[in-house]
Amino acid sequence: MNATKTAAPAKVTTPTDRTIQIERIFNAPRERVWRAYTDPKLLAQWWGRGNQLDVERYEFERGGHWRFVEHSGGETHGFEGRFREITPMERIAMTFEWDGMPGYPAVSTASFEDLGDGRTKMISTMQFYTPEERDGMLKSEMEGGMNQSYVALDLLLAKMS
Amino acid sequence: MNATKTAAPAKVTTPTDRTIQIERIFNAPRERVWRAYTDPKLLAQWWGRGNQLDVERYEFERGGHWRFVEHSGGETHGFEGRFREITPMERIAMTFEWDGMPGYPAVSTASFEDLGDGRTKMISTMQFYTPEERDGMLKSEMEGGMNQSYVALDLLLAKMS
Image (tube, rainbow over the protein chains, first blue to last red):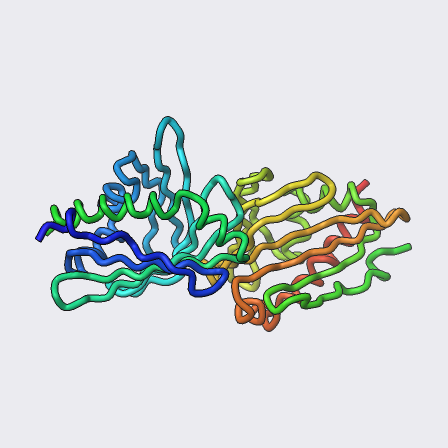
């Protein structure tokens, strides 16, 4: 089974007017997906969708800060936030803020479910202060960029062991 | 007129289930209040209510970060955030996060109105993601601490020229 050919795009829904939910299945065991989500060296290989990603800060503990800078088409885009909750193998909650809209953080969560057949379902949510901020994110290139990141993650997971 | 004797406590209201609004009148012209709110050397003299306050970071521009550490009763309390909007003399909007609840930022604004008689009305709002987070702030020692800060600010404003 070749994950890079069979992976379905992420399913994006809007459970409330201030939230976005994303579901994606990865063809890899949960422990491997968890490592790819939490090891900065591995994150740098997929989060930027093939673009150079500098992990400037990655303090993976409650209260720790993170900051990524993606280099894309001659531009740099900074993203940062702070970890709210970390439950190993199960769940990460953190704030997420793009330098282009400073002071507008969202709360981003990712939960990982072992599907029992070597695959892992990831469910992510984003919570915003207002419906307008949520809609702004939906109208951005978020969904396309996110799916590119997940394809890069499929490729990385297939290489990991 | 002695501001330290006549200042009324801040008026705290809850316009929505996710917001807090604070009104306070200062016996000083708007330009002076603005300086006390935006010059880190002056902030350090009132924000900590008499406690030592280390201004670790204060990048007073849109997108800039701020971080204060207050020393109180042998403990240290960190607060930080990022500036969302700065309109000179009129309005500051920024995120506000306490180290004790990392990843739970609120959006804090302060607007300054020249009352035309040498006094300035400050209206501050705090917006939270959820009613529960808002209620947590209301149940904390926020109001008492805030009023102590404003009394310290009254004293500072009276000394400034």
